[in-house]
Length: 461
Ligand code: C2O
Ligand code: CU
Ligand code: CU
Image (tube, rainbow, N blue to C red):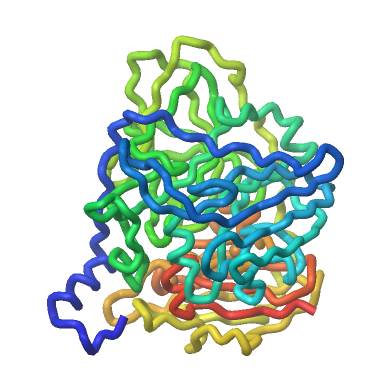
């Protein structure tokens, strides 16, 4: 947005989003939570899938059609379940009337399959990518990444989930009945205009588009029916810019079992968890002692009701969560590695930069050797207004957080991550290794910041 054409009121209005975030309307709980369908193989033999980006109409509000984007449907996308060890082919097809890309967020694939802005498909074009799944069980996601258009396309509905399963995830005895006690939850806030349409250019804010209406898996006013058992929620902050701090309305605790890229070693008991855009967490809530009278709900920090639960009188299966789930560790060697890359995140609105520069598709900012672990130090430099949290993400790899401001990260961040919230004046150190070659993006996952150039490129060779 051009600041020179704005009057004082508009300036103040725009700056409001900096500190004071519009709160979400409470979910009235009148609609059953939608569960994304599971994407089927194209044929019985191989792991060949087709993913089509499409435009359509969706009845988000009763009796009204909203123009939306989706994968293999009109809104959001299916869940793609992959197994470690699988060789997977995905045919991606652009059926939109604008360019798009297919980016696999959190997946360790070659740069040419990663779907960054260089992999743009024109309307009608298709591309087949192939990769072997070599990373551990986790909840990843996919979304478009065309240069300058990511925020709008995600806002219109392009986002889907990827589950990776492995021997460990299948043997732990965690809740794993998809849609019953293993529930995907994609949190997205939106603003609808008076015709109940998603008008991105009207809603758009350069510091991140925030809405007053929450959709979970595309469901307005959702509720979730559960049995009396332990239930696993796979939380994805799929919003363009909003941060969530999830809590239970009773103040009770829950456990976190997984970060972005895998299981924690042990469940971590929490009363709340904050996720910035693109971060995931798997949590388990114990409903086994509750009854139908109970009014448990997932709420946001400010008290707004995100997801009310409806407990049935049926007993479920899962009563225990294992105490040991993984063997994630940070080695002494990783701890003693010198910092080889320094990044400084700075700015707000359309004045956002990394190391003083805006994204240039022709410029490679860093190089790194395939298979080599390096330590990146990322600093969020405050501005006169204090600055803001930037959720920082790197493509093509899962990394380890070594420290936040020199301190060990909290227990629930001692696991694989691909996105990390960085507060104003905070310095984080991460250890990162790329398994494949190619050019990968790193950027702020406030999608408007990313589109405004808060992105750079690392070439792995
Ligand atoms: Cu969700 Cu460039 O990423
Ligand atoms: Cu990504
Ligand atoms: Cu940012």
